Length: 518
Image 1: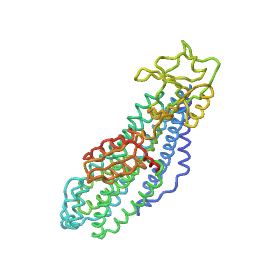
Image 2 (image 1 turned 30 degrees about the horizontal axis):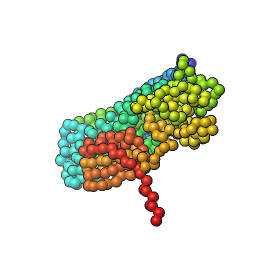
Image 3 (image 1 turned 180 degrees about the vertical axis):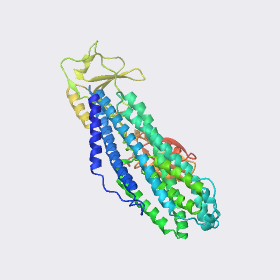
Image 4 (image 1 turned 90 degrees about the horizontal axis):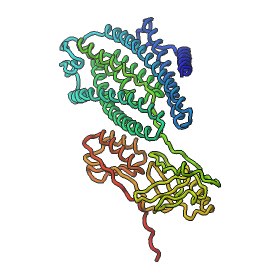
């Protein structure tokens, strides 16, 4: 464990050294600051820390991938490896946290220099401009109000009211992400299926919640950003401040470049857009407030900008692969059965997730002696609700393997071996299956129309499932192979729009009857 921890530290330093060596020369984000040596040095340090952070995020992804692979082996050394990997993960995440704290100090200083430079070279409009308090006081400034088209001004006030809710989406998303990360780490080291499935249920709920938050954020922030950029650009253009428009255009270009360069290192594009674009909007508002002589508003907006920059959207994407604890065992025959009084036939294990095929050897009113099973193994027994005992042999991965095993068992003298499939805990006798008995599930949605956010959630979670409109306020989504998946989609829909109600219906997938011959 200690050696592994030291190895991680060495790897971190190696990556940091490599990223420092490959750091590119930076350019001033604000024209006129190229000669400010402190500013340029801060930009170089910021780029260096960003490269180091990206390298460490790559390490975190690699460690989590290795942990997931280790979880599938479930051998005698799996727990030892898991402990070492968790130590590696903890060391690397601590290193990322330290880098981010250092980076925040740099970013605050960089933005302070830029803001002071811009504001010191701006003049006030004067005339009807007036001082006021509060971050958004300039929105009610008479000069500003008269300068904006009434309809545009109405829309500006509308999106302004959405700001608080949008900020809440981001805050909740980030808190949920920390929960997802913790649950995921617990999930991939869980040793039993029961423990893993309990964590997976909680993990799935948290991930679905973040999916809904992400879609809501994307929709609301897009409206806010587009409207505010349009109105503020119009105002600055009307005041003949092409210099400020050029600055903000440059910020947009830099923001897009940063987003593209970091595309591998963030979990949510919606959160990345907010974190990169919100400071641009705030800079617009600071410029407008300065022109309107709103000193208190400038201070308030600067504090908001600082808070937004403390949200780090560079968080590794967490891909959760459902773990299967199914143990597959081929059918074997021996002269002497491995089962006896001290080693009885075990109970049939039903797995909550995964697919396994077993061969039913017989269903009996009473428990049977092992001798009747002709040395076949591995055996398992299941007591039904009617008190009868079903005996199975094998644990096969595919139906083809099961069909081949049936032929072997028939040659060994078993009269009627039958293929039984367990899929996610649901048992089906394939040898007696009537195709008309296949069940599918649909989600019925009532209570209103489906907006783009709800439709996007359905398309993401239920890829391939169609949305059908049956009345003005009723829709059907389906088909789903499992009730559990249908329920997850239904819950996500209600989280997106609380006015909607959902229910799950079962559908008997009966094939069309063949026409009788004349």
